[in-house]
Amino acid sequence: MWQQPTSLFTDHYELTMLQASLHSGAGHRRSVFEAFARRLPDGRRYGVVAGTGRILEGLEHFRFGAEQLEFLERNRVVDSRTLEYLEGFRFTGDIFGYAEGDLYFPGSPILIVESTFAEACVLETFILSALNHDSAIASAASRMVAAAGSRPCIEMGSRRTQEESAVAAARAAVIAGFSSTSNLESGQRYGLKTVGTAAHSFTLLHDSEREAFEAQVASMGRDTTLLVDTYDVEQGVRTAVEVAGPELGAVRLDSGDLVEQARWVRTLLDDLGNHNTRILVTSDLDEYAIAALQSAPVDAYGVGTSLVTGSGAPTASMVYKLVSRRNDAGEFVDVAKAAKNKSSVGGRKFALRRLNERGRATAELVGVGERPAGDANDRDLLHQFVDGGELLPGWTGHEGVLRAAQRHHDSVQELPGVARRLQRGEPVVPTEFVDEARQAGAAL
Image: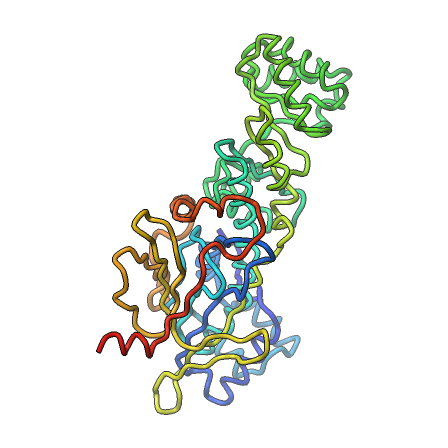
């Protein structure tokens, strides 16, 4: 959970836009903003929504206290009228969106904010920073989990990213199917399962590998995981078995040819009578390395750098655009950006996932206006998270993570089997924009 005000996790120009809109009077117009991705990272077949729960948690702390206001005044970011507005700021609008853990495709209206322009404007950077980071991590994690099959994946990338990003990455990874994390702060905040034993430095601290293993086993029990590649792997495995016996929980391999090494380590463990001792592999794994290890007798994967950097796609490239707003007559008018290669679709959206008779997704239906009657198998994708400024229950904290993880599992099951493969290609589910005029004609 956020421990500090989140209001300055934003860009300077959000507040100068706010000032100008208050000056013109348009800042109080009811508006609809939408977060979406124009495209998926090159070659990816689907994306995973993550970060929504963190946004909702941060929204509770999106306040401008004395310290924040003094900073803005001292640096002349905004004028006195805007400071007065910010002093009493509290989001009073509505927020809808895809359930965290669900899948998204190009054009999916992932998050919809309905409020005054002023309220929605100042949230832009905070919303995008959480969605872009967490969705990138979750999307990479989902591919890794798919490559791992039934074998568990452990998130262990904290030392490869910024400290708050590490917490967010652990949370996103668990939503996408990782079984546990090494990050203790994420365990405290979100109730995630945390794991870990020892690094090479622990072995090097002792006068011999045997002394290090004996100390670890005496402290943690025989079912611990011993890191066996500080020196010679074969001797490390033999020493580990001699110290811990057949109850040894696992050995960890962190270097070398992991496929070949895992095979002969498995044979060696079996020859020594340790049939139940598992093999955990680490060492800069990504989804492709995990897939290559499918034929090896590996029991679990520890993933760090590639996960927390999005495995080649460190951002989901989502944008946040005004799509509708009231005019001077109080009527809603659709608005859209028309710039080349950066266009948007105006209007407040609905979103459905069309499923066939076997429960497999065949299309992402997105349109403006009222939701069409459609097919009985269509699944509504938009949920309400905030009503009149009040956070609705079930979307944050540990409960929110569990809910998101289940949603992700169920959503992946809806995909065609090809989506779980690592081949490059177009989005596995096409986005179809439903024409409002056709809907009206069909209803006549």
